[in-house]
Image 1 (tube, helix red, strand yellow):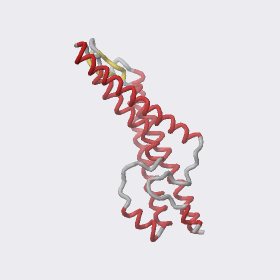
Image 2: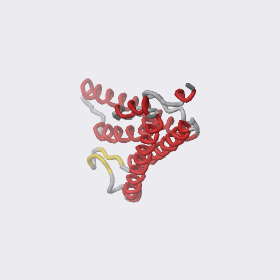
Image 3: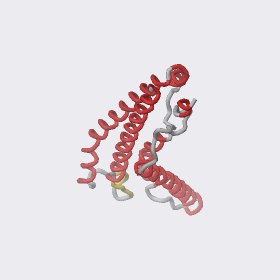
Image 4: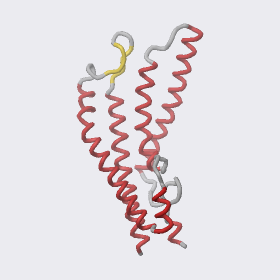
Length: 186
């Protein structure tokens, strides 16, 4: 009976995930993303008000929205994974949970390790783009020159940060799954 309590159910964060400094970092990233959403909503509404009533739209709102959506997604990605809110099909995992809980954790460990390795590969291939955007901001911008432009290196850096944090989170989940599988085997 005590072993059943160790098996995570549903979308709750796994009990083997300690809440340490990394959890606080990705929690802060998630909070920044949430505040960014609120700021974006204010900006969009101000633009609509300016267009409709003052006949003066705010310059660059479409570019800022496009920039923001990508930034927000990558800021919140690691926390989404940690909280168990990533979209996935749980049919096989639910069957394994009842019939072979150890096999379920082994399958999850493989899935999480492969996810971490894939994101490390993405980060490795993406790093030169981040460096180029940082070194040559005059060539890496969004918008219309003379009207509104925004440099892309901050967005590229946020995407890289989100990819790296999510890779780390995948590996932490894989390690926790391996530990849970060992605990069930005893």
